[in-house]
Picture 1 (cartoon, rainbow, N blue to C red):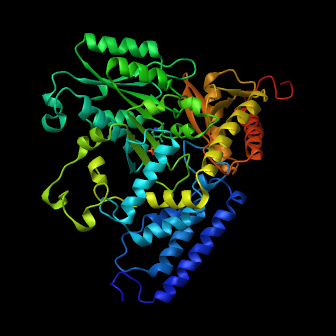
Picture 2 (picture 1 turned 30 degrees about the vertical axis):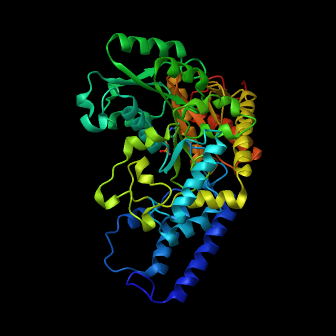
Picture 3 (picture 1 turned 45 degrees about the vertical axis):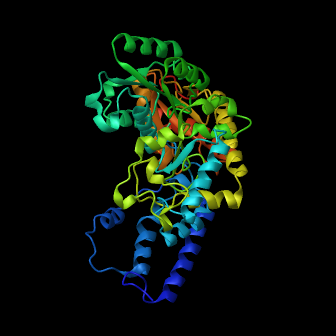
Length: 492
Ligand SMILES: *Cc1c(COP(=O)(O)O)cnc(C)c1O
């Protein structure tokens, strides 16, 4: 029995499935022996510009395309020396669970069906993991950007003095103001824009020397807005900033929010997971007092992209912000539509992928412990990397290390800031192109910094030692190339 889109020859299909499982298993097994980045070839670009095929080449042919133009290039975040941006490395088991996701093709929105119960259970597990109140509501979403947007939508709809769902922003008597530090993630800005609050009403609060929100400046900004007749709405705390993995003082933010009647949202895309660590939990003390928390499972928990989670302390407020029931989505309908929860009541997606399955299977397979162990290992590795950098006179550390991100740069004998920028920009390329490591960069105090974000359970001590060695060596090489090591490397 087949539709037109299913295979005619199921046995050939089965053989291909086995072959793919073999090839992909091999790819993962041997990943460390490959370079962390493989540039695309002209043939790849040509393939990506092919027009829509009206007649297919069959699954064998499609797999061949994939192998040549996608798989051959993809080591990147699977690799032990990939430390760019904040990117999860995945884990091998996702190969199995994502196969199941594809085969089931569940549209996990509501109903008394396994996919809904599985997501509900995963959300409960996550609340437990983060020690967040069990009565909170939760939703799996595409990532922390979406979770931040939804959280601020709940804040707006709950705390605005008028019914924003009905009257919209124009019905408000005064602008609503959101507070976050200068180091907040850009998705906070986008959320404020999308919610119609206007970016001028996102108050960017200064940070201290460790890149944490300055609480005095925050209180002053709130007072100024009140005096000017604006309505302070919410404060967004960062549990792990993208630049330096700084942790805002969430307990203090919770106190400010309580005193001022503001919604406290925590963007804990990666850092919120430290709540599950007995060793590092202090970094996010106060997280359980937040009105809402956004965090990713596809970054530091290494679940397959894209899955993040939103938790909202007041479940009724969460539901009230989104629930809408047209006749064709009648709540009282029986049968498969009478499950424990309707996830579309808690967000804006109706048809939703079965994101929960891979998380659920991974926790069943490995337990939560090894995921938290890997996080703790990365924390220790960041401390080690900082120590290695501090012990290498040609390198300079650029920020305090409070989490899993280390910012540094090559200095050597160079003093000129423009030259330093050029050398360090080229360093990132050199490290990538020579198969040494993938880093990204940022600016700290106006200076270019190399940034190693260790959200990688495959990283070993030797990988970090290699990074420090090769950064110093390539830095010397590039500085020489610019004819700008006047004193000569010998003297240094
Ligand atoms: C990555 C990140 C986000 C956005 O998360 P996505 O999963 O990429 O949507 C938000 N905040 C912080 C601090 C992040 O690191």
